[in-house]
Image 1 (tube, rainbow, N blue to C red):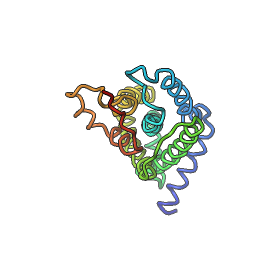
Image 2 (image 1 turned 120 degrees about the vertical axis):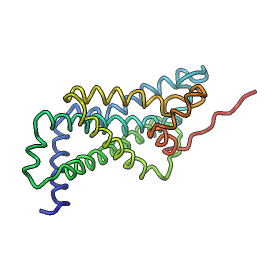
Image 3 (image 1 turned 180 degrees about the vertical axis):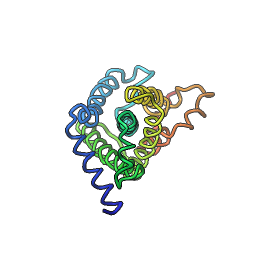
Image 4 (image 1 turned 45 degrees about the vertical axis):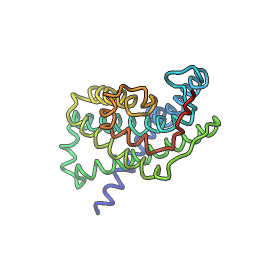
Length: 221
């Protein structure tokens, strides 16, 4: 069996396992849509009031995409690696032709495909709400690239975390602050000047900036 065949076989098995887990399917595909409903309501309610969540719905498209691109690979890969460590599955894996690199490549490919599908569902849901937004033509590259990056970070978390619960806790502990401090839901001008260079250290900030063309709010005198 060739390397490509081994990766394809592992990816197929991983995908089928994902479909059997209803909770995983819900949080991958339907939770982002629920988030849109909640935040779209907040935006409409607070429109013109000033402060957070007062931009048009289309402004937050990068934030909605960031939720999927960030949380899905961190939690899924991190918890899977930790579970394999707890069950000594990597030791068993060493007795098969499939290497750890091929295993990680297969799981990354599945996550990239799932994230791309979830982003598509999210954009369709946004369109149905009547939101006006313009996507970057680079989005087809940005989503897979960001997914691979965060799959790698998730694998590192799973390698060092104390068990599966620890990996999930660490993933959420990293993802939640990163989500709100990366020019997603919070406008960059609301950060203090001294903190803005810190935002530039977040890979999610670059994804947010490049994924959609945001309208600059008009300055009123």
